[in-house]
Image 1 (cartoon, rainbow, N blue to C red):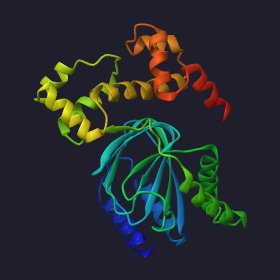
Image 2: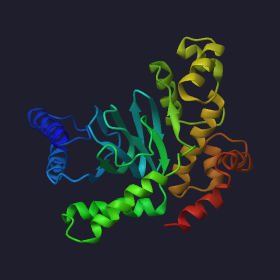
Image 3: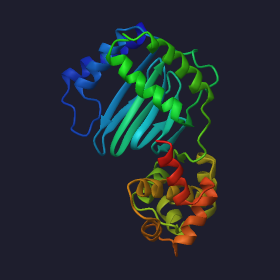
Length: 288
């Protein structure tokens, strides 16, 4: 833990010397709070961050494993192993030493669990997106409160142990949206996500990327593990979830995404999530 305290101190010193841009998510106050928490020398540290729209956390790494949990909003996370779009109630497992940067979509709330390497043994040595269940969610949020009260309650340590065991059991999230590494393809993906549509013009993407259709398809599949069409469908599902959770109706979301009818949108939604949009939302709200 001493190594991480040095890392935080250096970051804090840099923040005090530099004038940070307004959109930078790492403020002096946040870094100082992280430094104070690190003084506890605990094996598990939990921190909560609330971000403004379009906030940015510059690429960095640290010597602790991290579970980056998106409580509200959405986030892009970039790593050398790939890039991901994280919707609410998903978390990214980030191994110790893995460089990562974060771009925030809209106002968002992130809750992070920093863990001494080796305490969670079943997780991978590369980043993985995990689905956070109700128990893990409650343990993470309660852990934030435990940090604030200095572990004054005897049950705090028991909850910490339970959280580590629950992280071991979290399933990988198949709906995570990987982003390619090629800068031109990343730019095209980000433009699509700003205005997603049910139909994607492959010829236009190939021309903008300076590739043939075949080369574009091959590179996209190799870098994301998904065909371009499959990626487009998954992107539309993720974007639709944000709109539906915000209260927009199925018909409006379907038309906004360019589907010919609500039925066509619902069919695509069911194909990816196994439920209709209404059933999915009903189940989601019933667990909160």
